[in-house]
Length: 269
Image 1 (tube, rainbow, N blue to C red):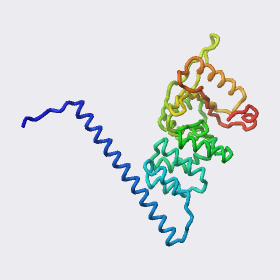
Image 2: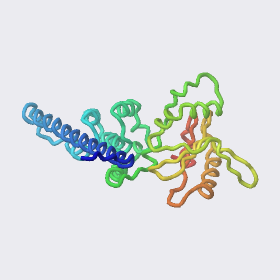
Image 3: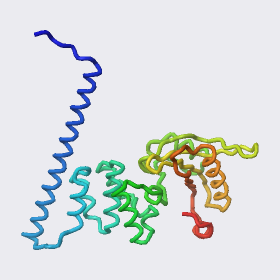
Image 4: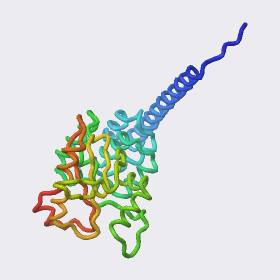
């Protein structure tokens, strides 16, 4: 029998097929284990603890058993607020959080820092339903207030340039705080209007939102002028940088204090 030499391309394809099959098997095993653990817990509640009520956990486990591990469920199910449970479960699925990242997000009060948490419960449920059924991610699910930037290691006095440089130095951690889906585009993006140059601090693109995200860094409290500056940048980006199929650019102003009344009067999120 004559030996046959396999081409590099064929070997690569075979390795990919094997790796994909292993992942499918792992997902199936994880799904089966999740359902097993759930049913064991359910019987203990019903037969020993005499709890007859079908809890929220049964719905969430059935829906996400192939995407999340039992450790994910164990952490999520014990959250008191159903909206929180929905939020963290769907964000785990969309952003593929490990259990370590999930724990960090919960302890960092991510849900409470989103615009979603400040909406009426009915509207919040509608947004989470759209995320679950259509993978539709909205800015209210992505942006948060406040952002925690302690990891930048800035102490005492520093300039906006120092802050910008620290963000770029710790870009991976900064993007993790922003959330999955952000891609870095430019620093000090030059914007020319009527022969006058302006410079946008940071420009990102969000894959799920399908839009550019302009970020301005301010060390002082929010001022009304910041809105006008950002709106100029956003209109310019929409005219000159927005690609076919993308949504309109959106802006994020990171400042030391958001000046509540200014924000309300200017009708900003």
